[in-house]
Amino acid sequence: MDVGILQKDKIGQYRDFFTFFLTALLGASVNFFSQIFYRETLDYSFATSVLLGYLTATVVSFVPTKVFAFSAKETGNTSREAIKFVVIALVAWAVQYFVSVGTLRWIANPLFPTVEEFWREKGSHVVGMGFSFLANYFGHKLLTFRSTGMYDRLRGR
Image (cartoon, rainbow, N blue to C red; front, side, top):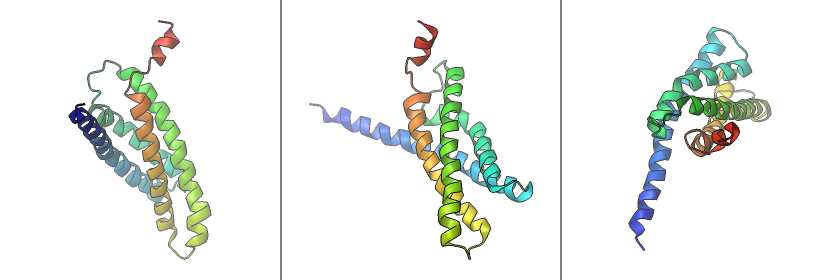
């Protein structure tokens, strides 16, 4: 049995995760700083600024995720992938929203009432972003940039 093949597959999986992590870092940075902008400069509520920050990051991160993270530059399925990307992004946004707001309400506010509100919100937002990262990674890896045959079945081919 050739174990070299198994080792290459394992390295490939780590490489996929690492490149996704780097593109997600770009999206997370956009998410984090745009959320602060929406909250502090435009005076949106915490929940609304989390939504707007996430949407801003989603728009910015589609192309780098497609090209670098999952090496899907030349699939010819960009419109299909964009639709699946948005569906996964909506699921991951819901994860981020509910985890962020829940963390703020049930953990940060009751346990750290003396900490400045800005830091409680940012900590809660980062927790939500972490869970969203996992939802995004597995969703995009298993659905977005992979041919599942679903589109062909829906079209009756």
